[in-house]
Length: 443
Ligand SMILES: Cc1ncc(COP(=O)(O)O)c(C=O)c1O
View 1 (spheres, rainbow, N blue to C red):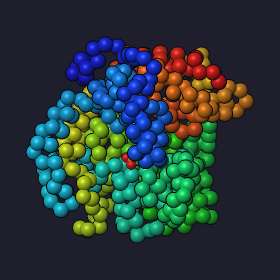
View 2: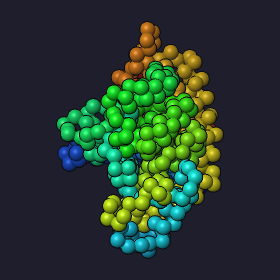
View 3: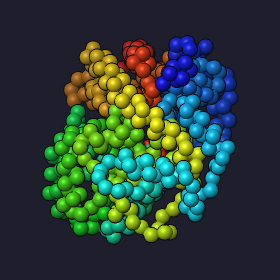
View 4: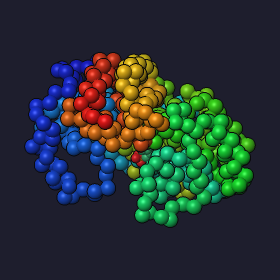
C-alpha cells in the first residue's frame, strides 16, 4: 500500500470549479451522440486517470472514489504491481485463446483459484470475461450436470444481463422489460432482509412448504442461485441460518448450490469469499469484478466431479486471456498479503462512522454490509420508514458535486465500496463529505 499512499500527495477531494468542467462536457456531448443510451450513469463523471482511491477527471478535478468502478478495482486504481504485471504480460503474449491452446498463466491462475475456492476437495475453474458469463457458465453447468431444467433464484437478485443470467436477475423491471421470453423454469422467491423482512426462517419455510410442494417439482431443480450478500439489490446481509438452510435444501433435493460472489468475492467483505462469514460452502462459485483489479475476467469454479463436462460443451475465445490472468495473479498476491485483512479492519471503521452518523440522522434507516461492502438506506422518517430513493439519488449527486464518488443500490441504498486499499483517513473524509451532502439535500 505504500506506493498507493504516495499517489495522493494532496488531499482529495480537490475541485477547481463546478463539475463537469468544459473538457468533461465535450466528452459527454460526444458520448451522447455515439454511445448506447442503455447505460445507467448516476452523474456526469468523466474519468481520465486514477491512482489508489483518487480519480482525476478530464478537467483535473480530483475525486475520492468510493465506488471502485462498481466494486472492481480491488487493489486501487492502477496499482503499480498490477500495472507492471499487465505490461510484462502484454509484451510477451496478449492472446492465444485458452479454448484451443495452452498457456502457463491460465493454468497458474486456475490452480490458485481452485486452491482458495470455498469447500473441500479438488476444483476446476472455467475462466470468463465478465460476471454474467461466469453465471451463464454456472447455469449451463448445473443443467448439464443434473440434466434438470429448473432453477430457484431470489427477488432482488442481480446475476447479469445475458439471457440466461438475466432470467435469474430480479432486480429492476427495466432490466427485463422488452426482452421476453427469458429462460423458462426460473422461480424467484423472497430474499430475507433483517431490516424490512421477511425473516430467514419464513423464507426457508416458504421454499420448502410452498414452492417445492405447489409450484416447482424438487426433482426438476438443477440449482439454487444466491448472492451470499445481495449486491445491486441493496447490500442486504441475510442471517447465518439462511445460507445454512439453503445448503440443506439443495442437498435434500439434489440440486447444486451456486454462490454468485461476483460482487461479494475477492476480499470485498473482509474475507476472501463472503460465504466464509456464513460457514457454508457452495457447489459452484461465480467470481468477477475484483478478481483482476479492473481487467476483464470472471471465473466459474466447481468441484471436480461437478465440472466434468466434455471438450466442446462450453468454451470462450477471450475468457481467461493472458493479460487478465497476469493481472489477477498480481491482485491475488496483494489481496492475500494484506488487502483482505485491510478490508476487514477499515470496513469496521467505516461501518462505525456510518452508524455514528445514523444515530443523529433519522433519514438513515439502516446501515448494513460486511467489510468494505457497506450501504446506508435512506428513508422518510415516520410511519413505516418508507424508502426514499429520490433523495438517495439527490444525495449521491450532491456528493459528486463535492468530489466524492458513490453509487446507489437497491430501492434507496447508497453504497460505500472503495478499493480495498482504503485507509481510515479516506473513510473519515468520505463520511465527512457525505454528511455535508446529506445536510444540504432536503427531504
Ligand atoms: C452479483 C453479481 N452477479 C453478476 C453480475 C454481472 O457482472 P457483469 O456486469 O460483469 O456481467 C454483477 C454485476 O453487477 C453482480 O453484482
